[in-house]
Image 1 (cartoon, rainbow, N blue to C red):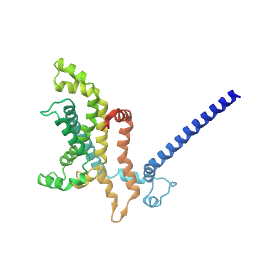
Image 2 (cartoon, rainbow, N blue to C red):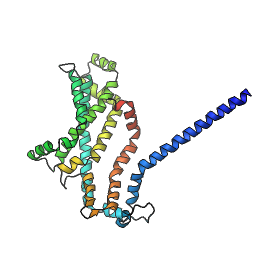
Image 3 (cartoon, one colour):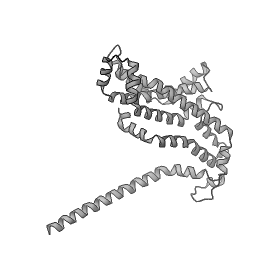
Image 4 (cartoon, rainbow, N blue to C red):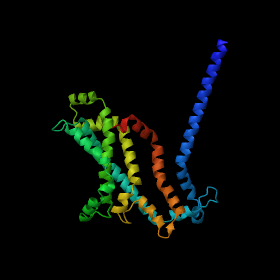
Length: 288
């Protein structure tokens, strides 16, 4: 009787574990479908005509005419090229400025011992500053310096807003490195530059890659500064997407096709580097 009772308890436990696992799995799949559905609907809408896109239906006769129309527009490639220049240049320069700054804040010695923490806090608070808060003075300075509608002016704004993000993320990784390694390097006569390039960068490369990916995605998706500081010759891809909303109405099918093309580079880049990104974020890159 006792063995039968134990067996029943074990079967009950296994049944509950099975139901809990499948129930949790179903909930996760439902949430994932709900989260991904707008992207799926946008992708499908790109295969509709404008008349079909007005009616929100899933079942329709697909056509490639909308994608052909979007891909045949030469101005789209101009905006795409501008976005690529901003992403590559802005991300690269943000890393060149942010990584050494994070290294100096962690391993450098300023005149006052408390200065490192104060400067790091300044970088952190800068991240919280919304672009709209500085748009008017930024626009005024850009007018005086003739940087409006120039790729260098927009890139300078992107660098200013995203370098603190690099400092914030990489600082956490540098803080986790064993201090004994750098003390031994000092005894061996290594300079700070050698410690940065030969020790810190290889050990914290995962965090640096994570920071670069986030900054690249932020710049790629940024619309507010690109819309207000540029014109047609230097505007980025998000500004191009806003063209499909006009006084005559919104071109839903063309907007969906263009948006699908616009998010493909970010999706492909994230898919190719997902291991490094996940590892970087879970190893302390977003620690406070």
